[in-house]
Length: 297
Image 1 (cartoon, rainbow, N blue to C red):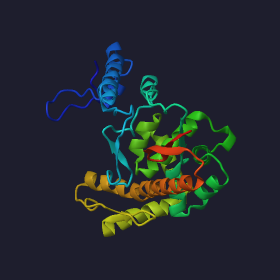
Image 2: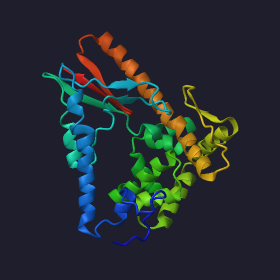
Image 3: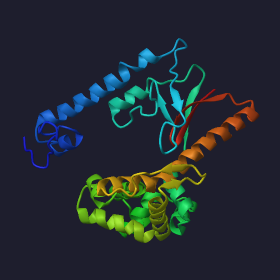
Image 4: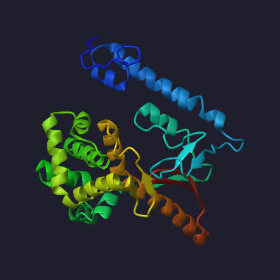
């Protein structure tokens, strides 16, 4: 098989067969698809099918542990088992979700925030353009695709929206043009246009991100809206790749951290509401970052 652009392992000198390598060889030989399928099945089997049934308690339910300080960003994590990463991407992965059911007479009801991190960026940066998109109830990805792609809002197709979505979330995670191009596909120039276009169309958001980075360099930390602080000891590292990695995390920390704070506040508010409402038979069973799931009669 062709080995061009396939990296070698630093330890063994053998060509890599990781996801990136296999994606580059997709369609070259039948074995590639078979390896990918095998790995998916193996992962589902070893992580979920063999493990979850053994963790079911005598009441027929799973009781994972939720850890309040399990992440640096302020999000909850869960263990024994981790119920925040049940697969959804493939049909066979989604089958595992079907194993999670409510008790008799109840339904599992999910509530989530729509595009919370982009809304938080709009709030923290006071960016007029972003705020007006949300206030007018427009879809943020379609709106950005329209503004950068130079087509009217109602003429944005799925592919253009997909690219805008990658850029919108990529900017939040400090992605550069190379990473965006890798995810978007197509020509590098298009990724460059989208990347640059975002910063031109949303000047206040751009200024906020730049200010956040400068603050992290100067003080070594960033804050969420609610004052929770995250330290970045490598932000002024002499090694460019370590410094760049710390900068990316510093850019995202106030946004993801504020979102995490808001979800926790929402959980407290809903709990208070349910206690006061009394007639509502509902209990919180799961939190997955921007989503809370209740078991409701």
